[in-house]
Image 1: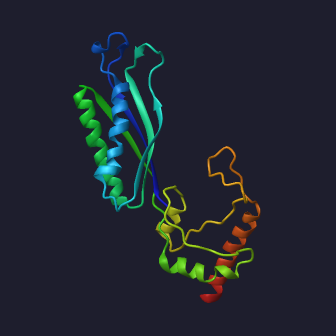
Image 2: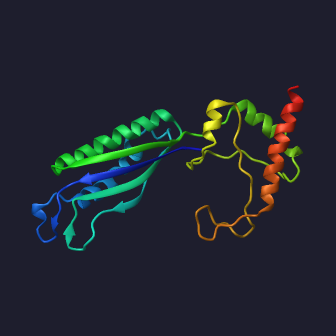
Image 3: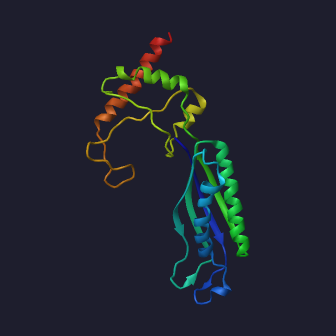
Length: 210
């Protein structure tokens, strides 16, 4: 799974009346331009063989329909599988934001918070778990999945100790709503299966490493 970061960009302009835009430094326009240009970070500035995501989920600025505000902010997330790409993304974001604000004779602030690191399974431990998966009560099969760009704090454990992270299938047949969807639900029998998988993994490892 991916490293999951959060950022907030604040454009610092000069507000004024919407009927007199020439007297302002419009941060709303700057934000709109940034939304488009920041997509180039992933599509044109990062090696396409290195997965990365940059998404903006929140725009905030202004209180009235006819007033240009002093500031406008964008809040979003960056997801990466390689920490070196993380530094590249931050650097490229600064280049774009500087270019935009210089052209408007304005300024910006980038508050970038590095969140969970990428979840990187250790090959030996992952293979060991897969070899013994069919012995776990309730497990009817398993498969290796491609990396996904969601974040997970289990990454901190794997930075300190060898181990592996796995998902437990819990989808209700005919109810394929994803996480964060208002209709999301899951088959609660998966909780028992997941617990058995953890206990079995622990006991099996102890038996094989006496």
